[in-house]
Image 1 (spheres, rainbow, N blue to C red):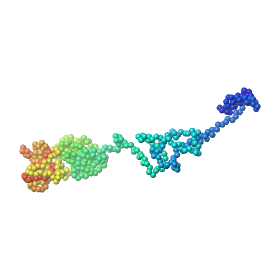
Image 2 (image 1 turned 135 degrees about the vertical axis):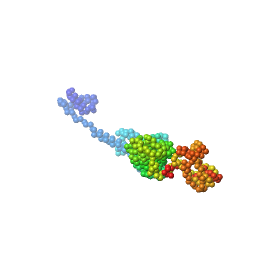
Image 3 (image 1 turned 135 degrees about the horizontal axis):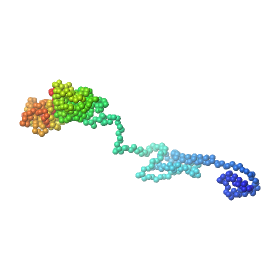
Image 4 (image 1 turned 30 degrees about the vertical axis):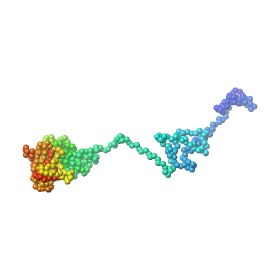
Length: 495
């Protein structure tokens, strides 16, 4: 064979055997044998067709990989399968201290080597888990991995209760959800945040509401709160917190130091005689200038008749300010144009229909119900029962002293008033006719005269007093029992 044949043969060997070709020594021996061998033939010139390439057995590799995956899956199932009763192992569930420590997921995901894999048909027994040392009691054990729970024992050990939801700290203030308007607590059913500005006197049929858009509700209490809108269908008596008397028919709102006349037609009678506290009366109706229809009075008695956009003013005692001063015994009309029609009161205007059946105005009251027996007593000639008022009272027109008492073995009763300093005093001596009976007397203040020895002038309007003395006289064994004492103010038309 020539060099050409050698090169062709060497190429054919490389194409057939690829990288698995023989070593150089073996290749030389093969070439020498082809040259000297008995069967050596001359290689035809030209391209020799290569032998078919031996195919790699890839199907065997795929089958081996599938078998390996199957074996790994069976091995993992055998390790994680639940315990089955029937062997020496008990079905009693392990307690928290007896349960083996769970293996990490990384260890479970490790695949065993194919050489160490046991046969699929005969799985080897499960390896015993390594016993982990028990943590100290102070350390909290990690929670075990969730596993299917076996059937419980008839009396299982109590399991720890789930931890309650953490409570919010006391110092955390929740932001309240917004409420629909009106949000002001004054509109709620609890009126304690509003001041009491008046009390209902006697029986009354009143309705009230707390906002202009609210519904009218029957009033079931004697207390009137600040800002309430009141509606009366007949004459209704109230006593303001400063002692002022109010009788009205219509709609009003009472504020500290202010009375608002509402509605189409509202009448309001005010008796503030002897009370040094200014009171503003305002006409409030849609389309009316509030500033133009504001009236003020202090220690006065007057009636206001609001009809539409004007107010008729009747001043009985004292004065009313309405741009101009309206003195006692005068009347006038106030509108958006100002004050007009100023003139003297007629007799019929002094007793309007609103004041019919008007009860006396109570200025002071002392009832001895808190004493055992229900009355106060004194014994001996010229013995005295003294009543101290909280503050001085100013004498006003129509003031009277009323009392209920029982004299015994006495000839006369002496009633005396004293000012706070004690320099001035007024009194009246009255002879007793009945003895040992309960009597009710009414003594007008204009019948009392000064008894200080310097003058005998009667008690006058504007005088002030703070003490009431009741003397029992003309009897060495005389005694006096007093049930109650009142100071009231009565209008001329009430007598």
